[in-house]
Length: 174
Image (cartoon, rainbow, N blue to C red; front, side, top):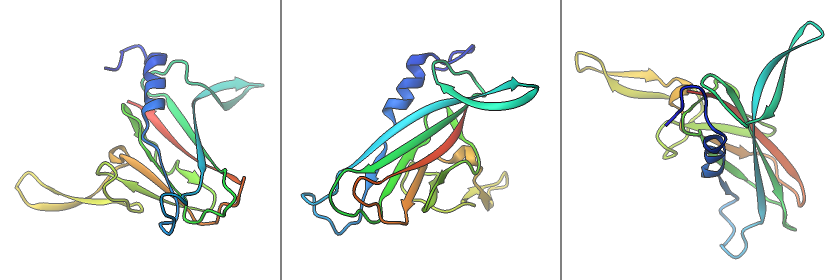
C-alpha cells in the first residue's frame, strides 16, 4: 500500500531489491559455458534545485519517495569472464507503483524493446493492442508508456572481458 505522504525507505528498497532482473547471453553457450556477467542496479531520485539563480536537476539517494517523484534506475553490467560475450540481453521490470517515463530508456549500442504483457513479448514502440470499444467493436490502440511492464536492452556490440556498460530508465511514482 502506498502511503499518502510518501513511500518509506522500506518500500523504495523493496522495489529496488525485488526487481526480477535478467541477464542472458548468446544461446550458443551451454549451461557450463555461460559467461560470468555481473549486474549492479542503482536507483536514485531526481530533484530540482535552484543554484546561482538557475534551475538544476540532481540525483539523490531514494531515502524517501512521494507520489510524482521521478526515479532513475541505472543498470551496470560487467563481463567478468575471459571470453567475449555477444548478444547480451538485460531485462528489467518496471517497479510496482510506478509508471515508465516515455523515451527515458537508454543504453549505448543497445536495441531497446518494451513489454505490456508481463514480459511475454517485446516490441519497439509504438506498441499496439486490441480492445473492445463501448459498442463491442474491436479496436487497435497504442499503449501509453504507463502500460509498459518490462524493458529489454539487447547489447548490439560484443562485451569484452572486464568491459562494462550501462543502461538507464526513469519511472514516475504513482
